[in-house]
Length: 306
Image (tube, rainbow, N blue to C red; front, side):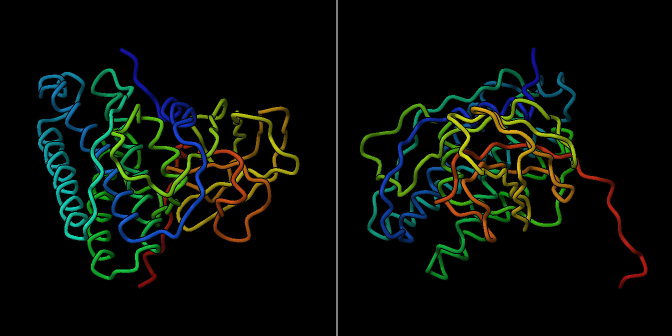
């Protein structure tokens, strides 16, 4: 049985062509709740599929403990509860909650499931963090923040289970609506026609073709779903940092740049048409995001600092 790596997950995520760009209307709190519910449905179905497919004995045989399996059942419970809460909130607001879609998840065994889950939980955490600033209701913002905390706990659990550093970055990484939808859409085969349309679009895909596993300072080669634009930048989004790097090479649909020394953990990589001033803007995204896992350097600290 083959272990699906973070590199393999990233290649899959980059292949999405699920949604064509749509004209964006003003985003409402109901839109954000529907968007969050879309993601929670995906996670809910993902975990229930795995827990239904793999009994405890499969996890034990793969080298995981009964304690981990019991924690996983709490994760399944959490995701179901998130679906119920968001559905109730939308109904109370007079909106029809979106229903679950039909999905395809490329895990084949316990280890590949856990590796994929660590990536999905990271994306889910980034989604809530990135979407928080769009919420106008303080009540809804409080609920979103509460779910964000739980998603971050799930992320740490699954990262550690996958053999990654649980807290590889001092800060969470926020990601915009379109970027998250680009990643989630890779797993969506179809959705009910009755579901409300989301004000999101999927960007053209970007896949890692060389440079994984990743470490700071090494070259990263990416293949885009189209020609690389002239004067493009490779942009790394990680923690509080958005770092634009001039490519060392760009030819056709392939582009190479060195991974910045300051990134660590799950990192999102874009190709942009210009250098972002601060945070990345949708209008300059040509391709992406791809996902890379950057092994962090040994932690440093000063015990004299109080």
